[in-house]
Image 1 (cartoon, rainbow, N blue to C red):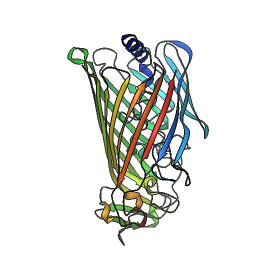
Image 2: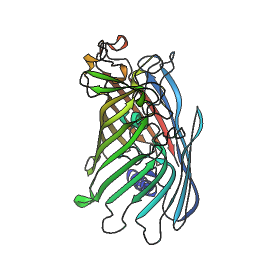
Image 3: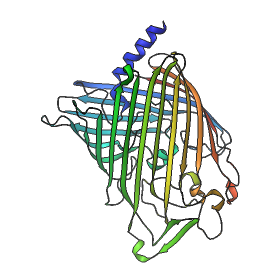
Image 4: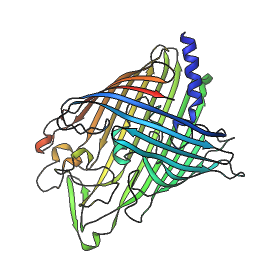
Length: 412
């Protein structure tokens, strides 16, 4: 029975290999309309009511537990000889919204080049374009949810994937609005994203797979006021000038990623990591903007003063199949430091202009998944979220914002 189960799982995995990349149809084999998707329903328990959370959104101020539909994806695609179309919706308890809508095509004489236009995942790094329906961990790392909320943007992209001699290489270059999935472009500036990845499969007697790559994001954010703050060691400098209004400030990211997977006698072991750093325009935390989201990227014109922060963030993901069964153990650690020019005990000092938007957070996650069958997966996962003490009234100790999640996913 175990061998039969593993065989079914392998066939199912291979059939949906293309779907792991969100910027692709379910398969590039020529086909008429095909419908695929997945549904994630879950129960969560927070350490305290009303916490700000990156595990499916903030909790209501009077609630420390909830049932929710995390994702309900319905993907429709069609592929002909030289072109394809993808249209994907996401339905949750909050309503239905568009997730993907893009056209892809390639010239007959240049099959290695793929042109994409519409709404698609930003081609940055590894985890952004990797489908949530296949990811072992419930959510992407905090740093990527902050920099690229909802992952998508509108624009055009050219991809390069040789079919023969250098098929281990993929590259992409995109020009996008920069305002993300849920908004029209709020200025005339466009952002550039580049991605270069290498993947070597079936090494060491077909037991070892290795991948690595690098990415960049070069963009701007429009300033709506005459004032902005520039990070320096220990705080911020304030800049006031009439020319600051309508000026564009830098939004630049640089990243690197690495993945390794090995088929050992005990079961498949996989390790994945990604690091990103750069400049992120944000705002100061306030009564209406909680600290953890003050450095989040904007989908509409920011009306207040901009805070120009130097940041870094990373994650480590380790998965271990248990004795070649349907169970997989999960272990993760991620960190996001929105302002690398200050340390926590400096945040909130008089005169340095820092706010809760400058606090570093880290998360230790651990859990287990069980593939109940080839389509149904159960995930049990706990997150310990940590922050150090600051001088701010509400952040003088570690917040009670841990989250426990039990999720059931069905994929078709």
